[in-house]
Length: 235
Image (cartoon, rainbow, N blue to C red; front, side, top):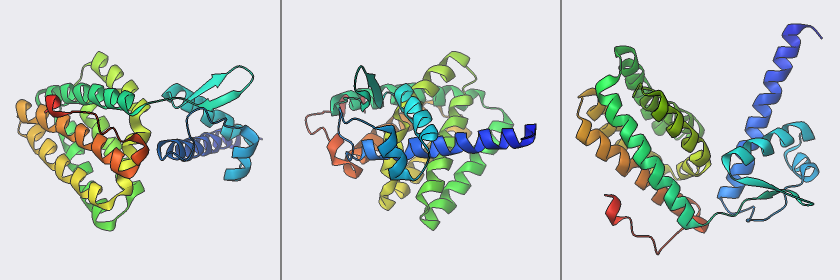
């Protein structure tokens, strides 16, 4: 096998591992894999009709994200997480992304702003087409553009790390078509505020947007519902 074939094979394996990672993460978030459930490589490989290699890589990714943990004599198991812990994660990412967005409203370059407009337009088309997967990708790119637009390496690193951990829960909300439309409408307020250099509206709108995403997660996957939570202090 020549170098180009080796590179292609490596990329294809990496892409397959990412796909398996998303599928297992969705099963966990939707409650189909309960906490402490053992994730057997052989069984998962058969379930997804792949070899054990991408499954093993996917489990490593899930471990980094905090959805899976390794236990002696049991191997990989679904990590225990409570709705209260998920509330705390969404609260943290809400504050973090709101801070990034506030700085982005003042610091984004013209190229950043052009890309933000483009992604928002593409997001509208994805909503019109009812394409959940495409909207999820564009949503990630739009939020990444805003985070990067703060031009603060420390904030970018912290926000990106936390976003990576919570991304499976944020993706689940788009299984609801109504939520996709709500998300786009919330993006519209955020994008307009950033382009207008309105730091106050930007901060509040981004914070509210992440709280809405948390509520949508509960609707899409009731296992993560926390009726005792009081989010009024976050508004």
